[in-house]
Image (cartoon, rainbow, N blue to C red):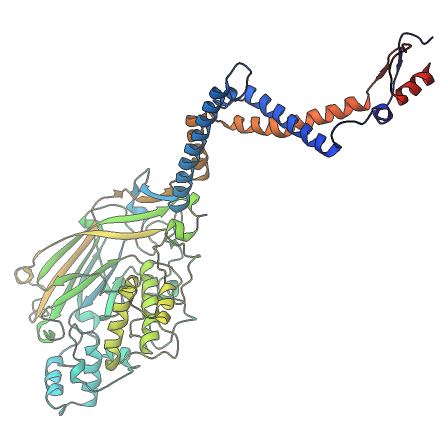
Length: 570
């Protein structure tokens, strides 16, 4: 007789030999086991989840209606979260940058004093060219006009306000134009009388340097040199556009001034506001040289106030200084900077360029105005086969003559209207390549202008200075200074950084469903780590499984295999 119970330890692979294989096929059985395992994991998660509402999905004490209601509420919450998060993401992707006021005021000592470009309306002395007289002779029959007079007359037409093209023969190119303008320009000494910088008299020739603009020969104070602004390797060598020679190695628009360089630095700067710390210029024009035909009945000077790293364009922005007037310009800087956390964004998202991001063929320094000037030069060359004399151009490119001036005006008009879609395909491709966004570090100067009649003759007659020199002249004075010693700048900042986006998403999820970062970790735990641990523990138990043999009972019904096993162990 067999003992009551005989425990025999068997490995799982041996024990399975004694199990009768019945029921469903093994593949279907495994699918049902996987389903049951997944449902058990889901019930376990819902019963213990920290997300609001999930615990109501399970539980034997809740009716099916309750479970369906809670499932519907959670689905609506998830949909609401998804919609709001989508809106936040679209805003983050579309408008990641916001312009706000800077946290601290900026001192005027940290920025350069503006560049001042002065252009005389009177371009030439009457002894060199009487423009009105020559114009009348050319209009009538063209006789009694010498070749030199005619060349100077053609050159003057390009810098006059009026258009005289219909009275002249065709002239496609005029490559000698600038040399003619330089030769007949009014001497510097006959235009500038006195200059005062930071309350000290200074020779005007040390402060102002000749500059070529679309209004002819002008003079610029505190502008950068051609070596600092222009790419000499791409520029023609026919003449100089910028006469300044001083280097700006101690300053850049993006980095500012170097530390501990003091006031003796270029471009010039000042430390305080007020009329005694700025620039005062006394200029004159001889009455006999004034020509009201070319000057459009206005006599005096055109002034442009711009940043030192910009090539002056008088036609885009200028202030008129009439003769016998005193003009005062009080400046308020307008500075836009960009924070470092915005630098990583695409330029099309932050809507600005750093100098290293936008290559200009003719300029080393990127500014919106420099980009627009280069774009205009390229488009004018594309349409007319030449450029105007003041535009940047490569070696071998012709200067437009009288015949091409109308084409140049049409090219500028098309460039201004490019957003209206009125250009052909070839022109549209060229214009789209311009893409002149503002510079990320941008500076300009807002001005408050006031002027009054300047009765200078009573002063000179009283103190007996310049009486003989100014007997047949008219004078004007210009005073430019800062309004305040400090100003509030503008700064581009992140509207939505990655941290802000995560915080917004977390706030929405927390409001609708009570989800936190640990809730996400909880989901990962219940659906990855915990099932894996359970699976490993289950395999370990199978490897150490114990088979227990029940006592043999006479007359009992056993399977053939099981009966043979019992006989063997008995």
